[in-house]
Length: 358
Image (cartoon, rainbow, N blue to C red):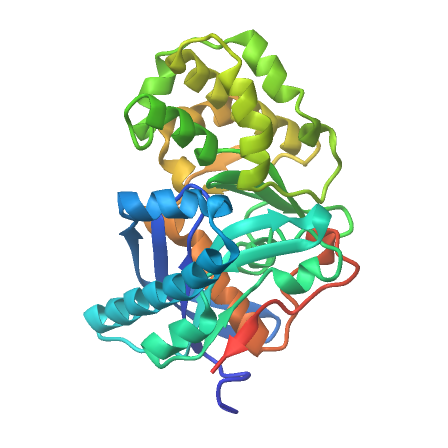
């Protein structure tokens, strides 16, 4: 156990499940601390797609009873553990620790709670490897948003970029302000919104944005989306599925536009909100990752609207950056370094995020 803390270099399996419900991302990464900087390499990564049944269960958690949610917390932890064990066995590698974000069941920082399912003890039971999980709770308990947590990784691992933009279920950005503090916020629903409409068109997702590109912008719908209260709030601020279902879905349902036009309008809405959120940041390079970075039409719209140089990296980083950074949060935990930044989350103090299971 003593060897685990401050071990350098450190091998970590990062595990991430996002709000877009694409699947379970697993990433084996190695971290080395060099004086005042960090270096990383990704050795291997894989996404385990969710079954149709699993997607329904994960998207309808709020409909479950308390005991059903508790049972799912344990079951999902065993599922993660088994997939991590299988992943490491397939590549014939070992890890010092597993870092699991889990899957967000509830996130309401305004009410002082967040809950990610995927019991860390169950992961340890399946893998025999220590696990760090429950990364958001410490920040919530310090009156923070509990999100985003990725900014510390953006700041320490991707130093050559002025802005990091993640196009996941929710789009979020991080950047250094004039005081060299890392600030960040959720910008808008992204793949969560696009996939919601794509499903109604008979597609799991809009590959490359081809369907959305054929539609027309409905300006009434666009204005109603852009006028949602969240966009007028000052950061730090964060979004969850509850907000999407309560605020966005009713707006979409009340619009008589065709599904294809709604989808096209959703693209426009996302690009506009990203442009507004980055308008005051000095021009420079913008690293774009997450599943949405593979959506050519979305990236094209963003490129047209922002003043920054948009950089989409290699597919490995596009697809697994969040899993990589949660692996990095474990490295910071074991190094005794705060990872939830008050400048990004609005908390009363920085926090060392995570809970260690042995």
